[in-house]
Image 1 (cartoon, rainbow, N blue to C red):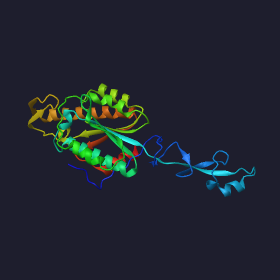
Image 2: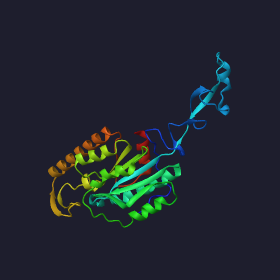
Image 3: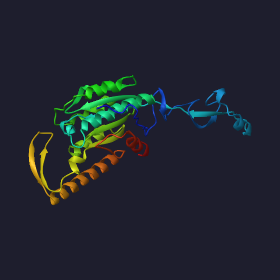
Image 4: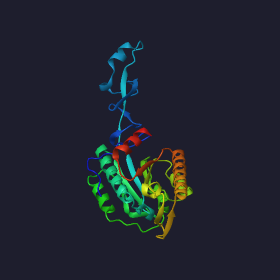
Length: 284
């Protein structure tokens, strides 16, 4: 499955860009171009092209004022992706197909905005065959799509997520942490702590068939994707209610955990919607 070539994700970094590359994000750099910031004296910024004549002529102390602008710079963003077997669930949709679309769209959107995009895939460790260093090159999204095509996870753990931080050294980055987060909460918190210096956007990949689209009565076949064990469960109204209560409690617990580390999570549920994700990124 490939992402709609017209779809685009709009995002912004919470911090100030530190890159030297001109781009579209607020930065710590000032100069003669960009968004107006303030006025400074000519001695602070000796640029005759930016002299504000009106303000200069009004100053009783004959100070020469220059307009100073906040320059826009590029950023680097990464998708850190859980490639463990639980992500291979297929119900209303296939989780990996959603992740595939998301990563390809992020790569294309970053290139159009002048930003660098990279991908770090992890199961029990960081997978070198799923490591794409941040780049602005054309065709990166096609390489990512080809890597996802036909991929079948074989490892039962996403413990390698905690090692991704070592690949993100240097300037602060915008990091999309993509997982179903079917792991102990203490493990999730360890990953968030390792990425704490970056601007992290948690993407919770979900399928309604896992938790909410359950029959009220009857036999259902349940398979543990981590161990591949199967068993039959007799679903009945009381069990369904208990199942839904536990699922809702888990989501609330995850929300509280993510918010402690900066951003509320985005739930990628059943289908990928670039506009919905863009609204979330611009509002949080």
